[in-house]
Amino acid sequence: MRKIFIQALIAVLVLINFSATSAMPVWTLPNDGLKFDGKAKQRYVKSKMDVVFHRREGERHPFSKFETPDGWIWEKFEVDGAKVELLENPAATTDRVVVQLHGGGYVLPLDNGYRNLGMVQGVLADAAQIYLVDYRTAPQYLYPAALEDAVKVYNEILRRGVDPKKIIVTGDSAGGNLALALSLYLKENNIPQPSCLILVSPSATMTNDFPSRKYNERRDLILGKGTPLNSKLDKSSYANGLKLNDPRLSPVYADLKSLPPMLIQVGGYELFLDECIELAKKAAAADVKVTLTVYPEMSHDFALLLPKLQESVDSFAEIRDFINLNVK
Image (cartoon, rainbow, N blue to C red; front, top):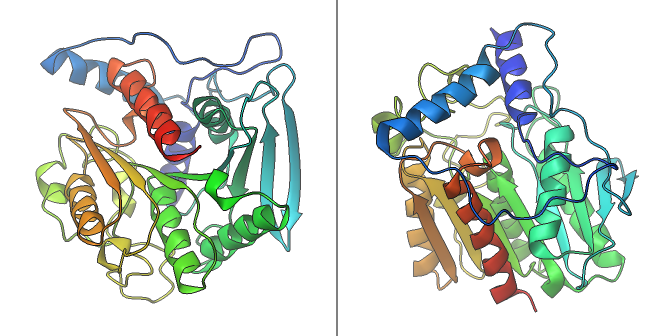
């Protein structure tokens, strides 16, 4: 069962079809995306995810390869044992820096899909540098291993002289959980916060306390009941014995005061809907500048996995505009 789950996760994470090769120009935000209504939209989502979940063993996904676009620099290195990769964008007109914390349930490492996504995030942010944190994962490494690695990389960026007001931290799914955990750690240790957090379908809790975990279990065609990814939702191997509602694992229960501006994007059909809404409410109550956008009828991490949809194009544009509003 674990092998099937890992294979499914790998398949999902290489689905990100932002092709970036040396023979092609770097990705640009489309003017329009594919538009569907109602059942037609869900048929499209299901058909795309069926390809991911039910590919023949050993079949290579056509978008699993990553090559740096023309003029871009790609470097791998370590910071006190923490693995990180750096993409440098030669076309950037700002000195902004993106720090990407990838998803994958705290069990998968950085892969080519997230390298492609990092390039996309750099374009959207007009960032000169994109740091991809290849943090340690469960079950070999438990809490707080991923957080420790994220902290090491963030502190290294500061050591290199980057103004924290120019740093944008992005995280999707478990990476959104880690982005919040990082920001809470920075607050507790009097380390300067980044300019903003971009949280895409963040897992705000490791519990199953919120109603959408139940009422959306059949509507979420990416993470819901019946998908290969659903079996690992009940408990996390990353928790390391902590209670799952501990704020260190479930930031929706944390004191969010003094966190930076955050954009929360979530699908109306996804399991994490209610916890994302609650996260936004608690952030607003703590005087955090927060924008919550619920994209109707969309499943978990839809923009990552279904980038050609109009809703995904809209979410990318919103990320770009939010960054431009909060990072000078």
